[in-house]
Length: 283
Ligand code: NAP
Image (cartoon, rainbow, N blue to C red; front, side):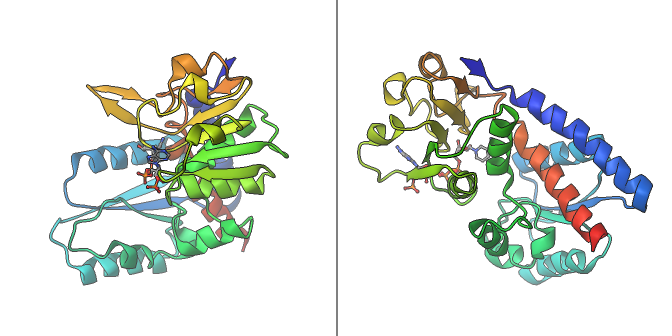
């Protein structure tokens, strides 16, 4: 059994990105810019945004944080997004969620141009993913999962991938990405009957549920590859959706929680900003 080291893969990718970003600057005078909008004072959101700008700095992306008051109107917020949408110097726009209750989140997000949608959540980018269009900006956590597996030289072709969870941000996009990699994909969710009947058939099992230790040793087959995106905080400790101690006895490759999928998400945001800026430079 091998443990996937998400921190190591993430750092390796960031080092590679830093080199490519420096090349863009040296060869084309292009400085990548990510604009992050944060509304209100949610402490968790503030930590996420701080981590994102620190990571940008580390790889040479200029990041600007636009902090707006909790009471901002829909119109004013939309105007801020539209200004960034029309600003040539901005490569990526990220609106930190959740937004205050009085704001129509969908409408705000729909104003981010497809080519600047570095979260990869827009209908356009999901549509492109569905069509296996290489120009899609891919949602960060699922894309991070695929990158982790690729870096550990997982052979996807013809493998049965079972995804537990069907959210728009992890389950559904990762299922599409696995399909693009030529896996045969089964998607399970809260209404799935006899979950173990499906998970036991998985060559590759991806869990994105949010339930501590939902997947136990008896629910997987020998040699399975397991990716656990779950983050479950219980009594100040973080647990995955997978009972690591039991399942790792049978797995050939497995992500730990923490230190598996988690570190990849911001790295893929950096990647998307690079990808968006590179495309613009090539146009
Ligand atoms: P979500 O939107 O709450 O979706 C959870 C999914 O799990 C739903 O599709 C739900 O089914 C399914 N589900 C719930 N109970 C189930 C059960 N007993 N059996 C099978 N499926 C079940 O969550 P999410 O946003 O995808 O996040 C999932 C987990 O990943 C969370 O722990 C979250 O913190 C973590 N996460 C981690 C990162 C990261 O950076 N590492 C990023 C995002 C999320 P229904 O559709 O039927 O309700």
